Structure formats: C-alpha cells, structure tokens
Image (tube, rainbow, N blue to C red; front, side):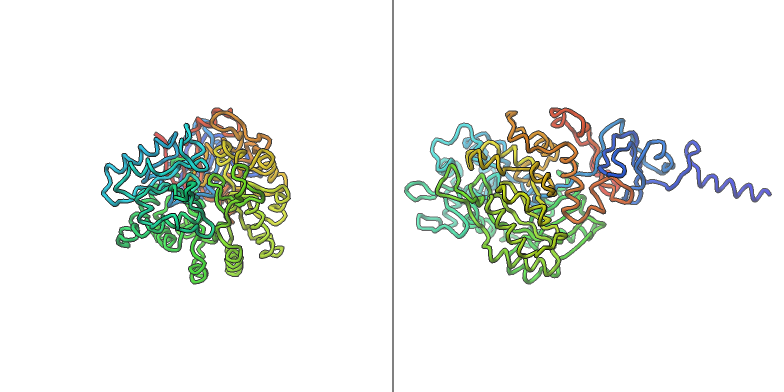
Length: 567
C-alpha cells in the first residue's frame, strides 16, 4: 500500500509543476503576455508561445502556456508588446551588406561636395595606391545639383583633385553604376577611344571625354582592376575578409529583426565559404542563397550545388540569380519606350537573351528556381516571355522576378497566370518616387510603377525586402513604405497602390517563406514551425503611421534562441 502511494506521488510530481498545472511538455522558452500576430489562418492571434528544441510547441493563452513551464524553463514577460514571425528579407545582398559597413556610406550625402569631402578624408588615412570604396550616392538627390554635369551626373575633376594618390570607385545607390576618379581611370586605361562594352555605357562630356561614370556592364572596366587588387592578397586573407563581412551582416540583421535572408546572388567561391560556416553552426541568420556566377561556371558546377536546410535549416542553395537589365536611377532599366528625360535611350539589356535562355534551361533540368532581376517594363516582359516558353505550363516551380518595378498593364496579370513571384522592395518605391515621373512620365508611372495593389488583386504573390545595401536593411522602414507609399517629404506616390497592414506583414513573412519553398518551416507562428520570432515595441497592425517609424526591435529569436535583445 505504501509503495503504491509512493508511486502515485512520483507520478504526480512528474505531471504537475508550478501551482498545480499539468505539464504537458517541458518548454525551453515561454513568451507570456504578448500581442501575438501569428499570421496563421487557423490561429491568427494569441498571447503566449512555448518553444522547445528550436521549434514552436504551443501558441495560445497565457494560462494554457503555464502548462509548459517548469523550473528549467526560461520565461519572458512581454508586457503587452507586439510579437510576430521573424522578418524574412526576400531580396538583399549579404556580403554586400557587410562590406557596406566597411566602406564609405554615401547614402546620406546631401550633395556632391559632401561626397568629395568624405572621399578626401578617407584618403588621409589610406596608403598611396590603396583603393577607396564607397556606395550610396544618387545624382537625383543632390541639393544643390552639380553645376557641371552630364545627364545629372557630376564630372570627376574635383573628386580627382581631392584624391590624387588613390584610385577611387564609388558605387551608385542602385549598384548599377560606379564613379571613378582620374587615378582609377588611368589604371583602367580609359581614353576617348575606349568603346562602350555590350550592355554598358561610359558617360562622356560633349568632347567625348569620360566624366567618371560607368553604367551597367561598363562598371567592369573599372571593377576588374579593383578585383585584381583585392585578389592579390592571400586566399586566407580574402576568406577572412568575407567571413568578417558575414558576421557584420548577421549582426545588422539581428538588430533589425531579420531571421531569414534571401541573398540575391553570390559566386560559387563565396557559397563555399558560407557552406563551411553553416556546417560549423556559425550562421546566426538563416540564408537562402541564389547562385550568381558565369555561364561557364554554372554549366560546370550547378549539379553539385543544391543544398537544402544545412546547418539546422540555416543554409539553402536552390536558385539562380541573373540580370536582364539595370536600374532606373542610372537609366539602365530596359524600357518599351524611351526615357522621358533621355529620349534617345531605352535602357540596357545586360545579359543576352540567348544566354538567359540557356541558363533557364539548365535550371529546369537540375531542379533549380530562377530569380531574374528585371526593373524596366521591357525587361519584365522579356523575362515573362522566356519563363512562359521554358516552363511550358508548369506553375509550381515558383520562379521569381526580382524587383518587377515597372510593368506594362498587359503584363501585370501574367505573374499570377504563370505562377511567377514578384520579389519587390517596398522602400524602393518611396526612395525612387523623387525621380520616377522624370524618368518615365506620369502616365507610365501610374500605369505600372510599383503596382502592388494591381498585382495582389490579380492573384500574384509579392515577397518584400530592401535590396540592401541599396537601401537600409531595416524592415520597419520598408513596411512603412509598403503601407503608406509616403516619401520623406510626406508626399504620396500613387497611394491607391499601397498594401494593407496585413498584406505588408505577410509579404515580409509567409510570402517570403513561400518564395523560398519554406512555408512549412517558417513565416507564421504555429506549432511545429521553427521558432523564428521578433518582438516589437509597437503593434504594426494597429499603431498610427507615425508610430510605425518609431518602432524598435526588442527581441530577435532564431530557432528558440534569443540572438538579439535591446538594451
């Protein structure tokens, strides 16, 4: 009898804990008293989450969550703060983001004089011959505009005077043009006789002299010499540089609430470095990486580079990134009609159609997704035409168009019809609104510029991101742009095309997961999914527009582990 009572007591201790609640399954971490936007149609709202072994165990009420708490469980009282799935950055550049923190950040330069001053200061501490790099300038945002200019671009002379001993290469905010000083152009052998390469333009003054701006494929005339300088170091030094950039990028993402990052194009060499980090469990952010390499390398290596869920679902490679055109800011976007502010120009086709077709066929044969950069309306149409031809009616392959910024009305319904995902960037709309009507006129802008509402109502899936380092990787700012379409000056850019709050959240979570074939792993807060969660200071579904911009990241949780906590 005594033995039976003792047995029942032991069983009771195993079943009950803390106030007599039945412990259904011991959680590692429980979040209590939150406003949980689960984005799960079966359980859209809750107040508590229990997590075990890196996955979500329970979503529901606080009283129910107590059934998962033992003395060993970490409990965080959220005090009514907003909880949602971790942000999925569906188009940005991971190494580029890290590198942008190591070079001159020119995004806030108000004018060309400030760019020159920042470059001159960098030269003061640089060794003679050392390359000076920067990124983020945009000629349309200079106030005042340069007195001497060609198509709005400044001339190199003052920059060259400020940097006589160092080659300088400053990337345009879009990444689709570079500005080089005289020393860099001298190293590259640029003269009046240097021809424009296919798919690129050397911008020249009326006398035929290069002003320092190299658009689209012409960038390579300068960049290849920097690459040679960069690659002159040992392989270990180069690898260490990439690893450092990955660490910087990961830290930046975690501080911004990003738990998954779609890396829009890396070479096989960098993918090898990333894979090694994943195999060693050294990736704090989950990466979905697109291959961006030469046709020759893709032919030789593609079949051996399909990886899914390595490093405890931290590393996946199953897609290819290619470009059909350039950017609107540098007038490289391939348009059906000429630019309004440059009537003899329709943009650039930067990768030959036949080469794209060959790569798309290789992707289909090897089970790879295709993600093609297309910004202009003609660029988008040509890609849609190629997709339609290659896919031959297949709709479940989730091929993507990256940016899909400017569309002909005739092509908008084709995304849903063909099952093509529009991987767009909300913040590009409000950042570019200043010059879009100038580039293509109001009629074309209203018809097809960042037409989120038209795409959504046609049935298309939109995933969201920032294209960092083109823009700040901050998803809060991008969310604000998506739901308001308001620029910094308060003006709205065709506000009828804005997303609803819930649409914008889904574009940054479950839609991003869907765009990477990962909707069963992430994108909503539901039992069985990865515990990738972010806690915010404001309720993004109900706060005012102004409060959105004041929202802070309080916790970023990846796989049930608190990777970032605000001070």
